[in-house]
Each structure stands twice: as C-alpha cells, then as structure tokens.
Image (cartoon, rainbow, N blue to C red):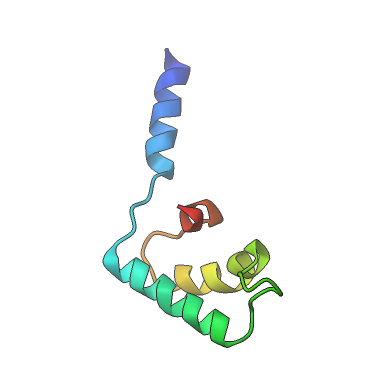
Amino acid sequence: MGNSQQGKGKEKENYESWTMDDTNELLHLLVDAINSGLRDANGSLSNQNVERVILPRLNATIRFPKTYNHYLS
C-alpha cells in the first residue's frame, strides 16, 4: 500500500505543465540554436545539444526546471 502511494505521488511530482511563457522561451531558444548552426547533418537538434545548450538556458529563465523528457513531451 505504501509503495503504490509513493509511486502515485512521484508521478505527480514529476509532471510539470508548460506555461505559455515557458513554451515561448523554448521556441526562441530553439530558433536561436538552429540559426547558430547547432543542427545535425540531417537538420535536427541532437539530444546532446538540447541537454547541454537549450535546457540550461531555458531553466535559467523559468520557475520549474525542465528535463529532456519534458522537452520531448
């Protein structure tokens, strides 16, 4: 019983909603990254660039830090 309650609380704790400001900031950072040439040869942003460049900049400006999994969602 205790484990299932902890699991439910943990799931809720890991859920972070995106505000419009968070989304707009992410979009600006993505455009800047693309314009700076951080795209791979296939034109996409690698998870390494997202984790090393974009997420730290995003998390410096928003209230609830985002992880790569948040970014994917």
